[in-house]
Each structure stands twice: as structure tokens, then as C-alpha cells.
Image 1 (tube, rainbow, N blue to C red):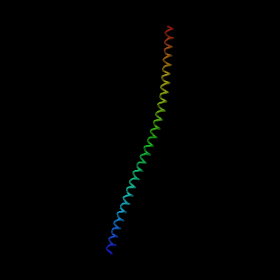
Image 2 (cartoon, one colour):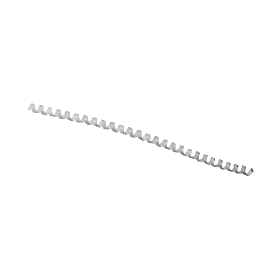
Image 3 (cartoon, rainbow, N blue to C red):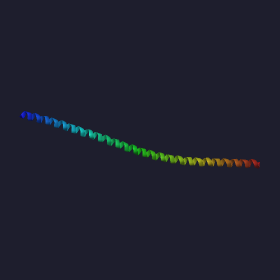
Image 4 (cartoon, one colour):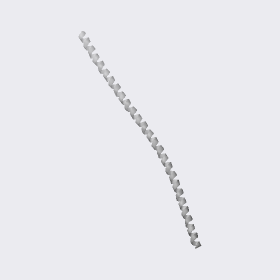
Length: 97
């Protein structure tokens, strides 16, 4: 009878050890998954930050482009006006000769 109890105790101890190892493995897996999730969240946050910076830079460049286009239009208008004035002066000079 004692050997049956001892065998049963040994079986229970082995089963307990297997369950303990299974729990430890589950905890390890959960920690690894948590670490991977945290890493993914950090990457997502960095990506979002970079996207926001890119959008800001795009808006700045678009504003600068619009300002440049306005300056170019003013320069073209001034050149056209100067060309017309030069043509008028040439016509006046030709008429005076």
C-alpha cells in the first residue's frame, strides 16, 4: 500500500512539475508577445510622428511654392510692363526723328 501511495505521490509531483513548466512557458510567451506589441506600438508612434512632420513640411513647401509663383507672376507683369514702355519710347523716338 505504501508503494502505491509513493507512486501516486511521484506521479502527482511529476504532473505538478509539468504544469509548472507549462505556466512558466506561457508566462514567457506572454512576455515575448507583450514586448513585440510594445515594439510595434513604438514603431507606429514613430511612423505617425514622421507622417505628421512630412505633412507639415509639405505644407511649408507648398506655401513657399505659392509665394514663389506670386513673385514670378509679379516679375512677368513687370517685365511685360517694361517691354511695353520700351516699345512706346522707341515709337516716340522714331516719331521724333
